[in-house]
Length: 57
Image (cartoon, rainbow, N blue to C red; front, side, top):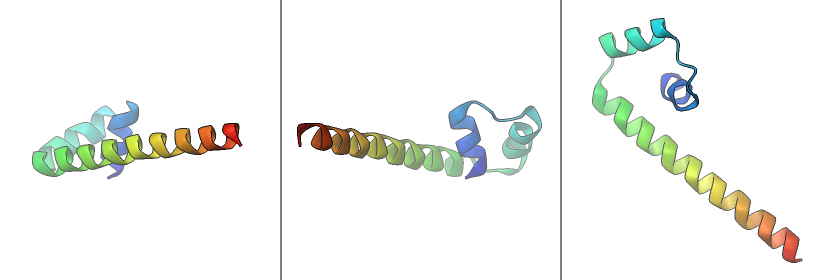
C-alpha cells in the first residue's frame, strides 16, 4: 500500500519501484491503485458536500 500511495503522489523512488516490479504482482498494484483512487474521490466529494452544507447554513 505504501508503494501505491507513493506512486499516486509521484514520490516513488527508483529503488522502490524496481523492487516492486521485481517482487510484486501487477494485479495487486492495479487493484490497490483503483481502490485508492476511489477512496480519494469519495473523500473529495464528502469534503465538498460538508463545505457546501456549512456555507448554506
